[in-house]
Image (tube, rainbow, N blue to C red):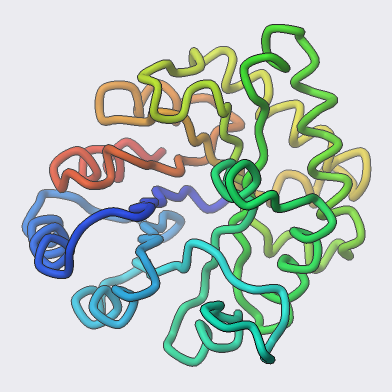
Length: 253
């Protein structure tokens, strides 16, 4: 069975005390993870030590970075490399979030380098893809997302690609309150899986976890996650509320 994942993306939010309160509130909520399920917390880099310490010893719970530099070291003031994250226990790194693509002009080619950097330290890239509103309205979302995947991931071997988690994020549904219907989510998740099947074979494609990331909340998580090709969610705003994120974890199938 594929891994089912509830991934929290805190983005650039919370003070240190607020982060501490949120983590401790979450630990007190009623939630559980089966052997094939994971909860991942992508926190601001400055809170990684705090989060790993608070969550230490929790089964199938991991702390992730929200981004990394493509080089392992060098004169890149203000940047953090994948090996640096690995040295403090980070095993998952989010790459290519729509905000990184839009605000920081991260290209498919750059993201291919970042994927290589994360895999080189034996960590898991959580690779984001997805279309803006104008692409969805034009009905060309499948080819748009396929190009993102091919340009950044298709240089990988079959052994490497199964280590990558995909997060499909309809950009038009991030922070807008709009959500793709469960049918829309299933349709494009199935298409994404078919893209991998064409390149790597169905057995490989069936091992890749594909998360939905677009205004996931407790109220819609169960319906979204019940779809056969939706393997969990990359959660933004709702992950900043302990009770909401606990409910999302419990919605995993």
